[in-house]
Length: 237
Image (cartoon, helix red, strand yellow):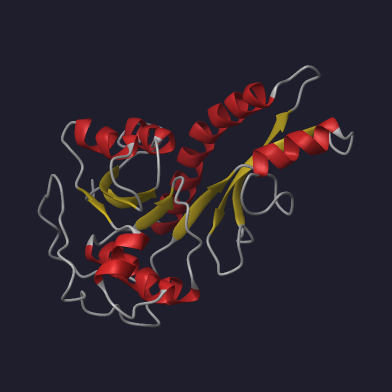
């Protein structure tokens, strides 16, 4: 069997979808795959603890926007995205999964992962600290690097933030009877990339927002694995 496909996961919070990926990696649901790095936009989040508690521990690092802007005078949000891209490329992934990553990725980030632009050198003011470091493969990174995102809405519905809350309100207003979850490829336009996996989710009479969120999260944990498998299978053909 060939070496496991390498997955780098970007998070910003509790990491429940990261946990679903870690649980599935190497099983029949996500065969010949390994979560090799986790990058968080925030420090001290549960997702980092989950990665460190994995056996073996998964290398993690934090790349926070505010910290970057404070430590690199004159830098911009685009510079931050390029730094995140540099760190991602260094992990030599076959796939990048956005699992609750709370920043919109700019065209500058996407160009680096597509291989149409080069990652800049690390800013001298920053010291990249990797927890649970592990050796990287000697092979060069292969471009383009596919990126997928989980979004808690159906294609063309409730793009952007607070999708579940807006769907719930639309149900209360009698405008919809169901919502859904999708995994899609990442493009410059927010939540507009090609859908890979789509799952409708019923909204029931009497549901509270918490009820709907719990039902949605259960589906998210399933289809984020399905979406990753779709991409990895396409890389193997």
